[in-house]
Image 1 (cartoon, rainbow, N blue to C red):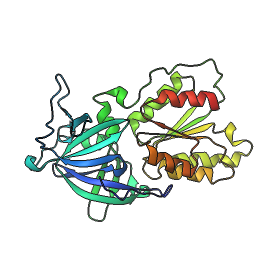
Image 2: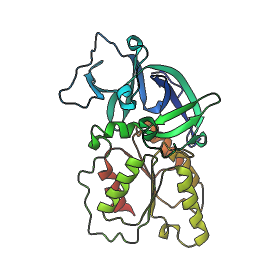
Image 3: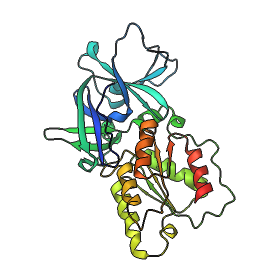
Image 4: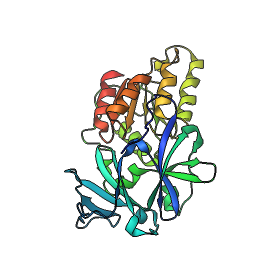
Length: 301
């Protein structure tokens, strides 16, 4: 898929692919999207998988790559208005290829993360519960969906694989870890996994802005900043401030730059690694393999 994906690092902006499911507007970070295809494809039909969840339509192989298909209409309890012209938004994240069945695609919006707010904590609305952010445009809003959560409801290990995570004999009582992760589901999983690995002193935030305010606030204490913040584990996609911009602020600050910053994201690929290196990230790890991240922390802080 041709796209003007942001090449700058640390600009705190993203490009969102805007699409419709039924008559409601949703969005996904364009960095996750590889292509858009017709839902009805005679050359690569979708093959159902026995005993799969109803939202999981099956798999198809357009070009020697097996792609799982999830029907967002069923996930979000919507109805397609014109099934003959439905589309598949094919994505790659968490080292997986997934096609999301949508009604239509509207285009691409360039948005600052500062313009994206956390959704209200409402119950009973599946779309709201599965949204990580609300982007306010001039004439409408876009719900940014938690695609990791959608996938995890069908395969939990596809989002966070904790295989091999064990507590080592190392004394970790003096280590203070900060987490910035906007998905409530993943935030909780990461915190619990760190606890299982022996790191009990963990502070977590659901956006980069709050994490920055917390970390920068420790400058007032003086002394060695690492006595207050041993490392930061940050997602890249977050409302208010993304992980790249958060990393850049830390590394540009003489009092904070010693803090190790580890980017842990479903978006880590060759291009994103270049961006992460440009803003000074100490290491980058792709979800779902949290074991490698924790081993690196064990060895380096």
